[in-house]
Length: 93
Image 1: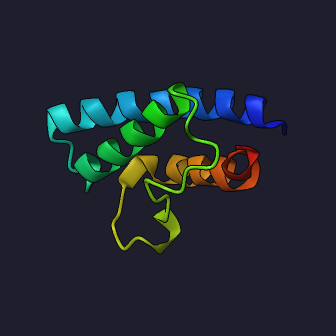
Image 2: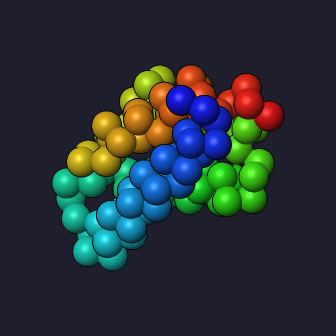
């Protein structure tokens, strides 16, 4: 996957996750433990993507796989974002 395509895919997926997390936080949905942390992180990643600063950026840290936090129904998509970033975006800058 080319970096530009990966960034486009990243933006779409991140926007979907942000929308879902915003709703979960607003409803205090208990299926989304740590939704506030996940929302803050994904918003930061999405902002960097929109600003063109995601390639070459090593912050915020994507270390979802090292996290002991449970992110509920969005956790797999957070892994997907991390994989897109590590495999196709990070070193494109």
